[in-house]
Length: 605
Image 1 (cartoon, rainbow, N blue to C red):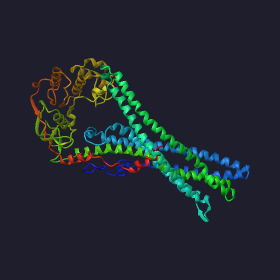
Image 2 (image 1 turned 180 degrees about the vertical axis):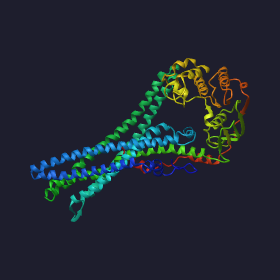
Image 3 (image 1 turned 90 degrees about the horizontal axis):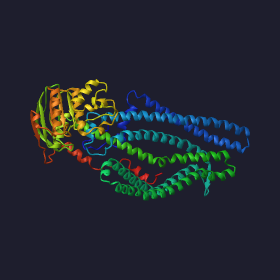
């Protein structure tokens, strides 16, 4: 995970990427990626060697044709069959090895990022701090893929182009001979022309491409606005139908789509100009060296084979020199995806460091098998370091039922502190062992699959017998679900809010903990239903301690004690280091590799 200083600033781009992914290549026992890279390098070298042999073959073939040599021409046809077979084998091997590297590196990166993110509540905590790390699903599923595939593709293609450039510059230099310009003999003129040709093409493409990038960005913005409107209409289907607002929504969606058209026309115009140039540039690259060498061929100083060989070498050199132009969009896409993955890693790193604090300025969790649950001189802070609760002391013994209500935000933060997922604050929190404590929020997490799996989560689906599951459902008033234990329905959407909370209590009955911490776990129930759930716990888990932190629509007389929370309201800074870090994190950060953005404005293809 990338290191971050106290101000929240990440390390430089490439250093952060190497720290994120370097262990895949350099870690102990990582023989597989090293072997695959070695094979990939060998295949690329073989591909370049075949390209060189094809270049020589061009010279031999056309020299044989120039001599009208049938035997020579037939021999070259046989050699071409071998070259063709070698090209097919190396290209196939190149693809297969690259794809093996893709999936293996992506698997390793995905496991690393998910392992850091989905641990000790970091996935929840990271969403509470500022920064560009929203939508972690897309970063893990898509951006990691692009980061792995893009790095391998760019590195392999760059290595191949460098080999081609080095080898074919030498070939082209030897084929150029000497020419006289204004009476001055000049060696290697075709190499100079190749560099001038590629440079001129890059400059013209830059000039023609600048308006195209702006038009493309405008079109992508309009497309995104249109997609957002469609998603919003889908999510608001019921309110739109109840308001009979279909006509107005159709008009609004139509207007959003029509806004795409002007940007589309500007992009089409820019593409037309660039395609016109690119097609001419590519076609001329085939003929240009032939035209330049024709005078030497007619003068008898260059054979027909040498002329065709120099033409192909010229194309190889200009193609290799065009690697930055051809790959700038891919580089920009790769950089953006790596940035998104690193931003998620940075957020997880920050909350991990903050959760690892200890001493007088941290929340110290003491998880022992004690016979009480309590907090002592506890100060709770918001994620920005400002105080929410001050000097709170509470101790709950086994069998007690305690209601802690008051300020909703303060109560929610206290619940998360006791649940062990809120690291911001200071003081002492004494908790029983994890296996003997269950924290229940306002909505339970129900994994995909059957109701049996959802009810018994996080245990295995077959951990509880059907009779035990049916009894638990019946005790909380969900008897009608006992016949649907194996239905693979989308249960979070199928059940109402009250049914979901009853299901949480059924899950508590299944696991029978000694300590139960509830956070707004009855707010979707009516008063009688809320009191009934607490009565079920008292009846079937009489020795368990129950602490309800938050809103309770039922009677407070159900509890042995009641504490009312008042939030600290003056914005006092409790955690100065964290507060300073948050202030730095909300400031815009410079984008790495700005030269890519500047160059890409002229090289959009």
